[in-house]
Length: 174
Image (cartoon, rainbow, N blue to C red; front, side, top):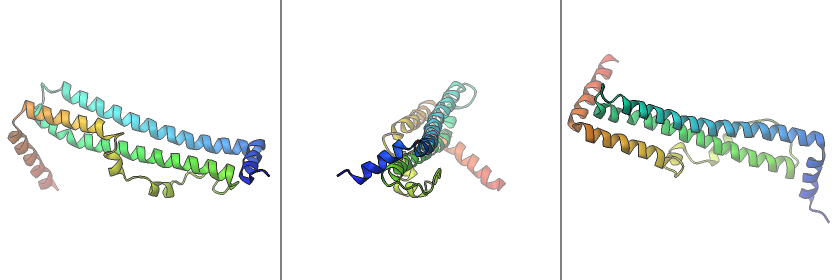
């Protein structure tokens, strides 16, 4: 006797209408996954461009101060990259679930829904992804480079005084 799941899968794949609906839904999810991966790639490109710009303007601005200030954008882009990676993983989980749901279970509820709330709950946190092997080496390297530039090109005590002076001015204005 044939496996009931195999019969259902064959039924879905042999029915042109259901197969077309399944392909459109899967294409929609694949497009979102591609967009998240592209966003992650763009974030890396943006931070590299910012870092290159900061290094090139070092003659007109004290590099030690600027190097330490670069920690903020590097950490921000690191978080953003990890956020996009988390979303991409959640959509990949949705993709696998939808294929199983449509072909093996013959369940067509939630058609074209991109609700990933339950899939996000299963994923690592953004902080965990930040220290994963897919993001940590890239951004940590940038942090080390700019910290070394700060040490090499300036007195860290002067940088500390500069940052505390700027911080006081910001808080005095608010």
